[in-house]
Amino acid sequence: MSRTPQGQRASLDKQPHEVAAMFDGVAARYDLTNTVLSFGQDRFWRRATRAALDLRPGDRVLDVGAGTGVSTEELAHSGAYAVGADLSLGMLYAGKRTRPQVPLLAGDALRLPFADASFDAVTISFALRNVNDTDAALAELARVTRPGGRLVVCEFSTPVNPAFRTVYLSYLMRSLPAVARTVSSNPDAYVYLAESIRAWPDQPALAARVAAAGWGRVAWRNLTGGVVALHRAVRT
Ligand SMILES: C[S@@+](CC[C@H](N)C(=O)[O-])C[C@H]1O[C@@H](n2cnc3c(N)ncnc32)[C@H](O)[C@@H]1O
Image 1 (cartoon, helix red, strand yellow):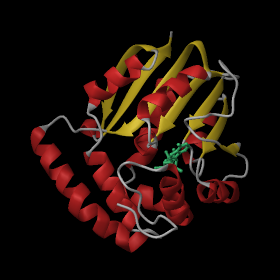
Image 2 (spheres, rainbow, N blue to C red; image 1 turned 135 degrees about the vertical axis):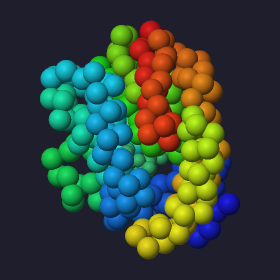
Image 3 (cartoon, helix red, strand yellow; image 1 turned 90 degrees about the vertical axis):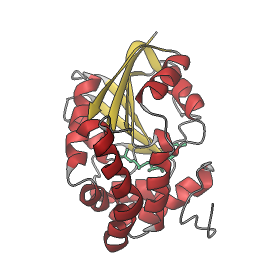
């Protein structure tokens, strides 16, 4: 579904202009809302993403769907040169205000503004789900990564314990939109968030798609019982 020209809530088939407009609408309070809705777990997920990328000082790492640069900033703690790219100018402007030291630029995950094999590592946190062609985005990430370079996808996934999964899905579909109404500048966007998480492939299904897009040695690690999964792979 879609609403106003500002795209307050994107449809699950994710037209890029709707997605960008929706994130423009949440940009002002994005970082705060994330931390509240994830009970502070987002910081742990970001640190785990940095560790999984195995970055060394001087490495060049690209963070796609970087938004406000909150995920990019964490990567720079490794000593690597981290640059973020995003489709939403609203998110990028919010990032420029709050993190002026983080290099952020406008770019579409499906047509990244970089030459082949430009990066030692690439990553995408909580954004692959929003791109309207998952497989093309994974292939585009491979294009800009040097042979032997690393990929880490940090994304919401499927909790492994069935009882926990039931509780989590109920939080996602009922409580999360209610909490978002009190903290977010665009609560409707969080209804899309809940629906898009529920519709997303589980861990083995996403691993198969990563492999099909030209990545080798695909593996994953569950965080917070599988609420989030880190898929990692190596450019063949
Ligand atoms: C949930 S935010 C994640 C931001 C950040 N990576 C984080 O970890 O908090 C998803 C971001 O993906 C961006 N995005 C969606 N589709 C995109 C595309 N095709 N190319 C680049 N960025 C995209 C959105 O604009 C949004 O800023």
